[in-house]
Amino acid sequence: MDYLIRKREKKDCKGIAHVVTTAWNETYKDILPELFLKELKNNENERAKNAFEKFDKNNNNQFVLEIDNEVVGFVRFGICEDEQFKNCGEIIALYIIKKYKGNGYGRKLIEEAKKELKKLNCNKMIISCLKGNPSNEFYKHIGGKYIKDRTNEILDLKENVYYYEI
Image (cartoon, rainbow, N blue to C red):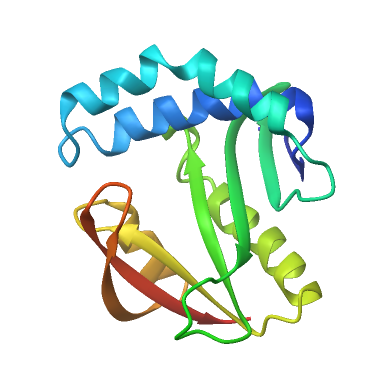
């Protein structure tokens, strides 16, 4: 399957909003309330429009995964804001539509993010993942060392935090 990983562009906002809606409904159906997931579907166009209007090419820490000219995944990264982690990057979001998982795309997206984090003088990074999310196994499989729990403040749910040297 031909794929392309590239920096996010303004035109990708709709595709990224759709990936969030789809991936969250696939992954979190047994973790988050059904009403919350339904609301993601209902406000997808609004989220895409807001992202389009706020797009800043100079503050673009995101790559998209494109297959057959369609955005089917993405990674967002940046400097970790947790004071416990100095000179540390963070994978803030990594989502891939389920039918494209298992082909190495997640690992490839993370590798692109790592390259950018190194340019930002980060020599380590963290990734957090909600408890109960099957992706926890992926983060361990790619070398993540579980270091602590923390609470996802937006969802008020516990998540595992994984540490990586980069």
